[in-house]
View 1 (cartoon, rainbow, N blue to C red):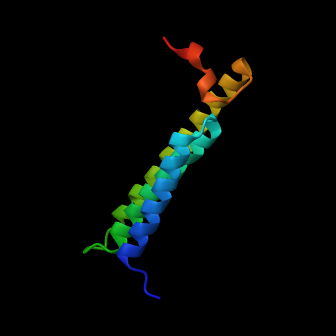
View 2 (view 1 turned 60 degrees about the vertical axis):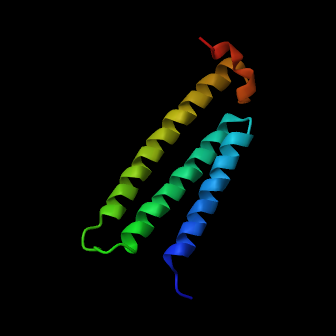
Length: 104
């Protein structure tokens, strides 16, 4: 089976849609962070696919952008989990609906 650009874009859009659904429909902060990570993975897949099927494949710009994006996603996950742990220690819950006292 030949992998085409259309197949990869369908997979990427499905992955992004699942991440968006997880981000918007969940109440717990951990699941929201997982949804954001899924959306970033879909964007990384798009970077690699457009580099692979592009006209100039000599320079690995898509790979470099994807590696940079993975590094940023790792930093985002570390900061996000640190915030979730700090909020859990204070409120004893990860339900984002109960964080009403965080309003300024």
